[in-house]
Image (tube, rainbow, N blue to C red):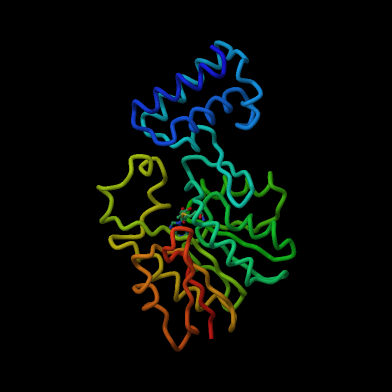
Length: 276
Ligand SMILES: C[S@@+](CC[C@H](N)C(=O)[O-])C[C@H]1O[C@@H](n2cnc3c(N)ncnc32)[C@H](O)[C@@H]1O
């Protein structure tokens, strides 16, 4: 079977199973088993897949049809122009989260002391450190397995980050930070039944924020008020439906007026607030 035939075959299998972006996924999986990137595939349309490659491809297609996200099959996801290793121990970085990094880079300074809470693959912390090389960046997670993936990503991408196990920002030293950033788990458990099948492959600890999705914000916001210096900034990813509930957690005695930025779908996505 040559590449062009494999693309048609995999595309048909995925379409039949109702997998979205079937052609794109077919190309990504074929490029993966052939050990090349997707763009190179276009110069190899007539190249034969070996028997081993065809077998490996068949296995990947089966797993994709059974609901495993493509990124876990290829162990890879691009985020902020960087390639991250992803395993089922970490959330697959989402494009919306790139807004959090973009806004952090607009307001952070070189040399800032920054902590990323709930780092997962390390994508936020690593993207920040790549762009702010003299910042002192720490990153915590409750999951040791996630921290191992994050540490591998940092090493491969050539940045130094202080990774530590932590329950949200509970162990961060008082008034030690210029910026605290987090994309905490915020899917409401109440939505569990209606979730897309692929989400079940991601770690539950990375997704769910209690019954209403607000549990982590309730704990993290007061912790951030302790961990930030006066004038320090808190940046949080959020779901547009809970914006006002989160704003209501910001005690006016502790925080300046908050600002909310929207994502490409014009939905409220990033909350920015300065400690008084
Ligand atoms: C929504 S994921 C975000 C991962 C990554 N920052 C990203 O944006 O792709 C939330 C992360 O928070 C971690 N987490 C969940 N509960 C936590 C807690 N109590 N303390 C620290 N980290 C926690 C999860 O393990 C997961 O890695």
